[in-house]
Each structure stands twice: as C-alpha cells, then as structure tokens.
Length: 354
Figure 1: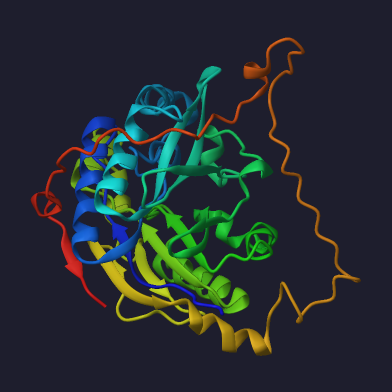
Figure 2 (figure 1 turned 90 degrees about the horizontal axis):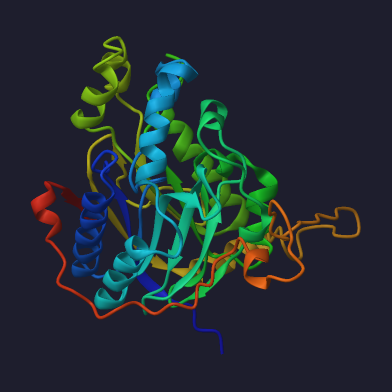
C-alpha cells in the first residue's frame, strides 16, 4: 500500500548577517525554530545563506573585488564542521528537515570555495551536500565547479528530496538527473539578483523556472531566495556609490511553493523578508503522471540515453593514503545535544501562512 507523506513546508526569504558566519548560523537556527513552531516539517534556506553572496563581482572589477573574495574565503565553512553541526542540532531538536546554502571552503585549498547546498534530516543527520555544478556569469570569479557526485536524491520523512542552486534550475539535464532518481520534492535556492539587465524581471524568472520543473516532473518545488539588506547595500556602495540604486531594485527576489501543476500555492513573497508556508500532499503527484511521466512511461529510453558521471573529482590520488583520496567528507556524524535556539521573531521577520 502506497502512503505518501503530507506535510507543511516552509521557504525562508531573508538576508544573511553579511560575512558574519556565527551570527548567520544564529539566525538560521532561529528560523528553523520558528518554522518548526508553525508546524513545518521541511524548511528551505536561500543560496549561500551562510554567509554572503559575492555582489562585489557584479559591480567591481576583479582587482577591486579581490579583498572581498578574501573575506568570503575566511568566512566560509568546512564540511563537516562546527557550524553545520549547530544547524543539525537545531534540526534534530525541532524535528524538521533542513536544506541550507553555504559557502564551503575546500579542506585542501584556502582559496577554493564552493556554492553548496546541505541536506539535513529531521533526526539531525547530514544526508549530503550538493556543490553548484557551474557558477553563473560573474560568479566564476568566486566559486569552483562542483561535480556530478552530488547529484543525488535523499529519502526523508517528507519524501524523496533533491535540490539545485539558482541558475542550475535552468539546466535541463541536471534537473532530469534528479527526477530520474524519483525526486518528489525539489528545493530551488536563489539569491536576490538586482544587477540583471534593466528589462529583466528576476522574480518572474525564478517563478518561471520553478514552474517548469514542477510541471515537467510533476513534483513540488520549494523556492527560497535571499534578500539584500541595508547592511549589504552599505558595504558594497561604500566604495562604489553607484551600486546602491542597483542593489535596491525591486522585483529581484521570489520565494514560494509550487505544486505539480506548476502553479504557486497561495501567495509568494516578493522582495520582503519572511517565511512562506504551504501544505503539501505528495499524492497530488500521481494523477498528473498518468498523462506525463517523463522518467517513466512518457519517454523513449531506447532513443534517449542520459549518462551522469558521479565520480568525485579531486586534485590527486594517493595509493597509500585512503583518507586523502576522498574530497567527500564522512557525513556519519551525530548532532550534539540540542541547545536552546534564539527566537526568529527577534530577527524582525514577517510570516506568511498559506
């Protein structure tokens, strides 16, 4: 007998405490507590929420932006590490699945960082990570390429869970590789990006990509996007005052939850900080797939043959040191005893219930 999960999901739309890793982890744990307090069993956080997006790469030349890159490298975290353990503690304490974006520093190179999504279940177990495969446009000045090893879907209490970061949600092959593993809940993490061309509606572009994945795969998509705080605007515009107006541009952030018909459930958040909630019933994924199941009966795998290289890439292999042969860390860690978490309401966030 097939019994698919029914649950409440939460999508956070918020800004990090800019380049302050500890303070942003505090904010993350507060938001986890708040979402769980509203009955959510899954909470999604924005792209690189811990603890900064490199906006300087869009408004400065590489030489001017290099000191900011150093700050980002120093604020980035290693996986596993104490910061992600604190978040795992909060997930276990509140019984909620968490997907959070981080700047991940390589264990083997202080100048190599990745745009990474971390998946944590409601028992506080770190299931794995996904490194953004290809940084987008100016992001290539900051992040290294990920590899196919992390294109995985995880079994959780809210169903088969996967995710991609920002522009990756435009990558048809990456999305299909998750759907082909049975993904039913997709987390799409984004950053507010007001530096796009003047006629580009970033909020609508985010919604459109989420709708495409939900409709094509007949899955639920949870979209979590960051915002740009006054703190971030002040920091970037201190040396480049012309950037302030650009960074304050509206219609640059969208967070919401979409159903398997591609439509937004309830009202999304546009630009403002807050949390969006929606009730999800995975049984709603069944009937639409009678018409279109692109990873099953509605395809021709005798015609199409997608191959995904999931071997982890590394700089060198050492015949006598197995531990150095693994860039992938050991995720078999247990969260330490849970500690009281700060109240998200103190962070000044509004709540939207759907």
